[in-house]
Amino acid sequence: MIQLEKISKTFRAGNTQVHAVKEVSLDIGLGEVFGIIGFSGAGKSTLVRCINLLERPTEGKVILDGVDLMGLPQVRLREERRKMGMIFQHFNLLRSRTVYQNIAFPLRKSKLSKTEKHEKILSLLELVGLSDKKDAYPSQLSGGQKQRVAIARALANDPKVLLCDEATSALDPQTTKSILNLLKKVNNELGITIVLITHEMAVVKDICDRVAIMEDGRVVEEGETADVFSHPKEKLTRDFMDTASNINKIYELLEENHELTRVKEGEKLVLLTYSGGNAGESVISYLAEAYGVQANIIFGNVDILKNKPIGKLVVVLSGEGANMEKALQYIKQRKVQLEVIKG
Image (cartoon, rainbow, N blue to C red; front, side, top):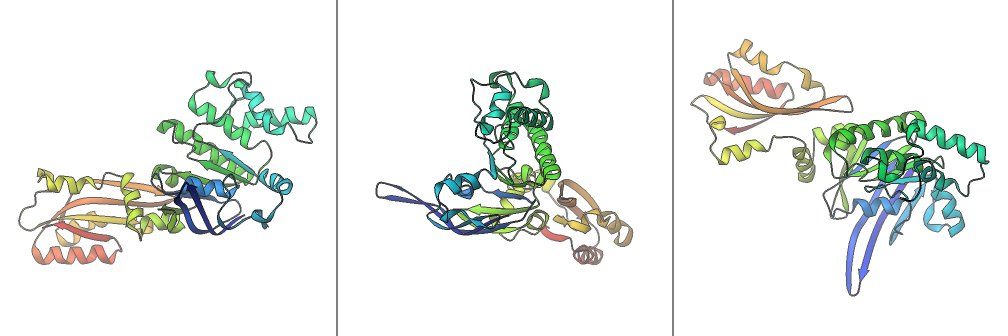
């Protein structure tokens, strides 16, 4: 549905040049939910605006559904842009218009009859769960309700692609979850391709089929969400994983010589990383049964990414020397990553 070929975007301010996006190439499939994540300043918002040419790339090609947007005259470009809806962090609703009028706004040049427009707006209100708010003004709505209006408005022209630029960043966690569920519904029921820009790991793991990690204007890692986050190749990806868990806390506790991290002779403090199939196995309970090695779980984090469990556990293992070595080998054989932190 979307092909980006060596997209670069350079901003000029006087004698200064800012290279916001650097030779990014991506293929985003029909009906896919694709996440682009990175910390602030990574270039992800600039990249998504290059997709619909709100920002015209300095170099490269943007191909939407087989059409190269960069070579189109303005009239054709406007037509192609109607295939892309966009929602923003701060909703961008017209404050002086009702919910109904906000959704109607993109349809003002539509060839639909007045009755057809009315029926379409009502169906969109039903889709986003706001049928009872059609006559309300944005000031009378919660943040989540405003974003639902923005989604309905973005869908008014029956787009093939929905671009979401930090669409949940201004929302609380519970409201974020409801908006993500709505986007899943839009994706499943309408088959719309969704590109999701975010700096929140929780958003990516809840909804994205595939993900690209951006840093300093470049894509540093890309792949299926569960694969990327269960076997991260780049430090940046590992850092993102850690923002969604408490695992890094163990290193703080070690520096403080916290009592939880103190090990006796014959004990080892270990970090176990589970991914995919091995996350459901009873590795720890088997250690006691087979090798007489006891496991005391200090803390951990397990997530479900696209129906695949991944997670980490910090555990104190205790047992006799020879049995301990056998237990460690068994853990590795079960394809559980093992890091001995102390002991």
